[in-house]
Amino acid sequence: MFRDFKLLYKDPGKEKLLTNLFKVDYEMARLEYLDNLSSKSGIIKVIEFGELKSPGLSDLDWLIIYDEKIIKSYKALIPNKLTSKNFKEAFQHRPIFLECKYENYIGEFILPTKTFVHLGDHFNEESFSSINNFKRDLTVGFEFFKRQKRWLRKVEFEKLSFKKKVALFVSISRHSKNPFFEDIKFELANYEDDIAILRSKILEDNLNIEMLEKLRFSSVNLILLIEQKLSFWLENNYYYFDFKDDLYQDIIWSEDIRFSEHRNILVKNLKLFPILFKNLTKEYDYFFLKYLLLYQISIDMNRIGLKDGIIADLGFRDWFKKSIREHLYHFKNKFNLFFKS
Image (cartoon, rainbow, N blue to C red; front, side, top):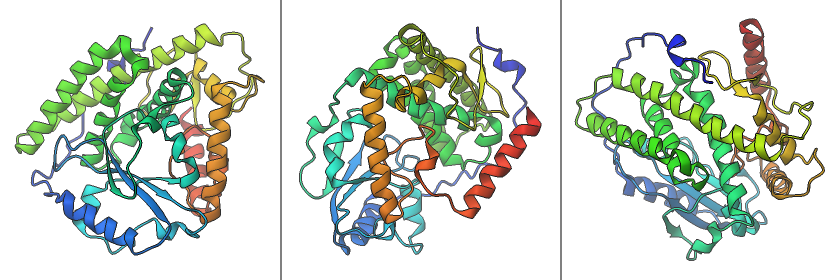
C-alpha cells in the first residue's frame, strides 16, 4: 500500500557535524529562566515535563501557567534576547503557555508523564486525565504526527539544526507512550533502541553522519505506519462523512498513504480531523468540545499577543493574526507548492 520510499530517497549530501557538542548546564538554564520569571507578577506555576535521558542533547520542556488578569503582554513570559548560549541550548523551543483557568484541562493536550514543579503549588497528576482518554490519545497522536511528517521531508529536515534533527526523532519515538499506537509498539520500541544508539554515538564523539540519514529513512517508514493507524480508525468510525470541506490549505491529499520529499502529502481520510473539530458533522462529541476549548484559549492568547502555546498544529491558523512577514512567508510557500505540483 505504501509508495516505496527508496524511490524518493537521494544520497545524503555531505553535512558537517560539529563534534564538540556544547556542554549544557541545565540547572543554570533553569535558574536563568526562573530568575527572569520571578521578577514579574502573574506567573502562577512553572512545571517541567519528562526527563533528561541524554544530557547535552536533550532540551527542557516547560509549561508556564499565568494569570491573564496580571499578565498584559507576552513579553512577560518570553525571556529577553540577552540570554546565555547555555540557556538557548537547554531550551531549544519555547515553553508551553497556559492561562490559569485552563490548568484543569491540561490532560486534553499532554499524555501522562513525569513532572517537576519549579514554581508554585504542587501539580496534581490527576490533571493528566481527560474527559475521553481514548480520543485524547487519538487527537494528540494526530497533532504530533502531522508536524513530524512535514519536518521529515528532506527539504524541511535540512533546515533543522543538528540537535533539532535528533529532537525530531525523539518526538516520533514518544508515540510509543501513546496507548492509541499499541499495535505498533514493537516497531516503536526498536526505533527507540536506534535513537539510543545514535545518542550514545554522538555523545562519544563517534558518529558516522550517514547514521542520521538512515534514521530519517526509518522515521519515514514508521510515520507511514502511524498514518495508516490514524486513517484506518477514521475510515472505520466516520466513513459516512462528507469530505467536501478542505480546512487545510497547505496539504496535498492522496488516495493512498505515501511520502514525498518536496510536498506535504497526507492520506485523504485525515481530512476528517478538521471537519470533526469544527463540528461540520453536527456531532457534539469530544472533537468539537476540544475545538471550543482551543478556540477560547486562542482568544485569551490574542489578548496578550501570544501566538503559540498549548495549541498544537491542528490547521486553524486563522486564530492568530499574521504579521506582514508571515503573510509573505506563506505566500512564498504556496507559490513554490503550486509550481512543484
